[in-house]
Image 1 (spheres, one colour):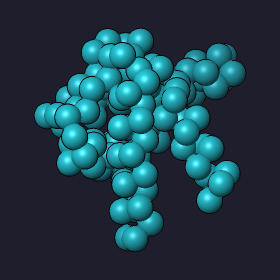
Image 2 (cartoon, rainbow, N blue to C red; image 1 turned 120 degrees about the vertical axis):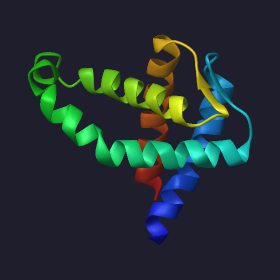
Image 3 (cartoon, helix red, strand yellow; image 1 turned 45 degrees about the vertical axis):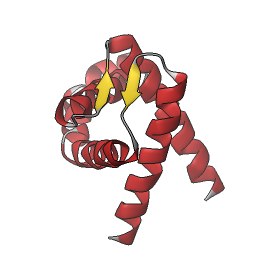
Image 4 (cartoon, rainbow, N blue to C red; image 1 turned 180 degrees about the vertical axis):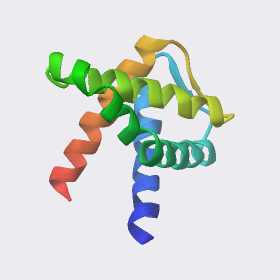
Length: 111
């Protein structure tokens, strides 16, 4: 349980950083970032495995790059559920998901 809470806080901080970098992503404060982190955690836990299995052929054909599209769609879906978190357009979601993935991977290497 502690690890899940730490992951939500880390994702919330990363969302605040990504919102400063990517023009189409907006977060209205720390509380909304925490809610967005929680929403992303739940969505990634429930929907991402199903989507990965369903899109396996296209993911194999694109050598795994289609997973970035899935991450972008899940980021936009999280923005639908969290009122103070907005993602305007697919490109903003794509670049935001890419940066979130890179930053998360970097933090995983450090810790």
